[in-house]
Length: 226
Image 1 (cartoon, one colour):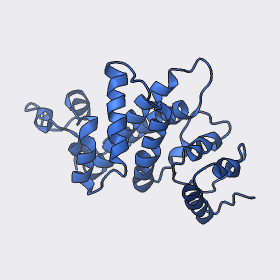
Image 2: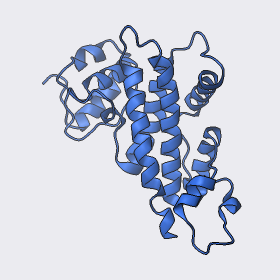
Image 3: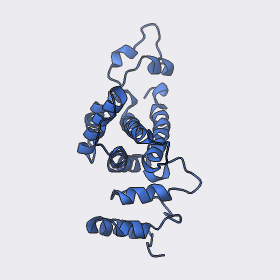
Image 4: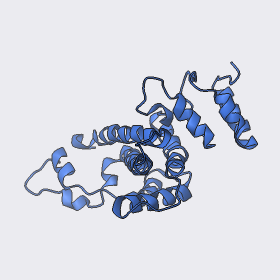
């Protein structure tokens, strides 16, 4: 691989983590005056998903994310220049990335139905106006924890709940919100919750979900009753 290409996956990953941090924040927290945060949750979730997908694909080979490889050629320069790649390169659009992921890695996104819903809502919010009767936070969280989280945990060892902006108290409220929405999440090492009663939140969820999450937490060494 050409030297100028080697940093592309890590550079994409760095920006993707920033987008995920804001997506979690906007999807979980709400106070008066933050009415626009639910729309931002959709935009940032889609951006995080796009970047993480590109980072995974670029791990296989950085040039796979570019849809116009021939335009990267510069007849007057024998070396491939990183700045030229940034300036001239055109990557695949968000809607094409699940298929590109499969071509590059043989993997499918776990929840394509949610991907399509989020993609369409993101397009409406970004280019027209926010659609009515959409639970933007629920949609965003489902995308993060059904699609992004399993992908980044497998490929980068990351847990989505650890990335948010309220660093003073850890991921307690993020986890509590994810559980309230009956979504599964990758469990960080030395998992601890101190600010919320996770058992109480879990008691209000569906029996099958509660049983499965309790099993996963127990396997990770976390006792809900401690």
